Amino acid sequence: AELKKELVKSQSAHRKLVDAQSMGRIGHAELNMATQHIELSDEVSALFGLEPGSFDGHVETLLQMFHPDDQARFRRSRDVAMREEAELDIEYRFITPAGHVRWIHQICRPEFDKAGLAVSRISVMQDITKRKQAEQAMLESEQRYTALFKAAPLPMLVFNDDGDQYPFVAVNDAAVKEYGYSRDEFLQMNAFDLHPTGEFGRLRRWLGSTAT
Image: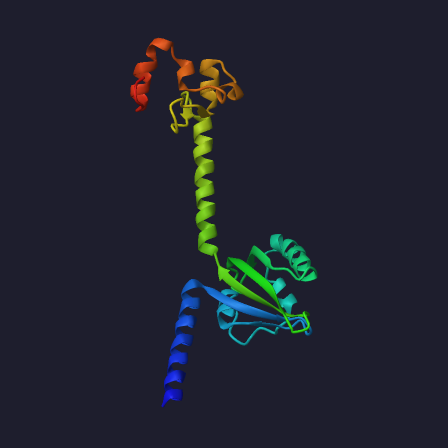
């Protein structure tokens, strides 16, 4: 009865682990150093768009699925990690058989036998495509904002409000033309440098700081 109870508990824990891996889009792989055969978990097979059991176990088969721009970088990093018997922590893109580009974060570390020889390398892989897409969208948004800011026909100046000096951190071309200072000169100035001393109190109040 106790054995049956432990078996049920073990099966339940295994299901929870599988569910967690599936929801987190995480899986694992193991490379046999002697045979160079790599075994993928069902979760990793799914990440690569492969049917469970369809992978031939050859490392080169997986590498051919890598995005062309990432293959050489991965090979270099992998070779160094294997030569130094070190951990590999890397992000890369691959292309599924259906043509979808996905991003993977892989952490791989060696496993040693009692004699201290590396006998395998264990990898944990996670699909980070959504995070990368969000980062790319943010980058593109920042680039659009920068282009609009630079091309705006009216003078625009951005200052840092952390403190009481309000130094300029960015200015557009119209501001450079309007005030006659170069961009480098502006970045050595603050908001008060464009106003006479008598207006400092009003300017501080307008900026939301405590009047001195």
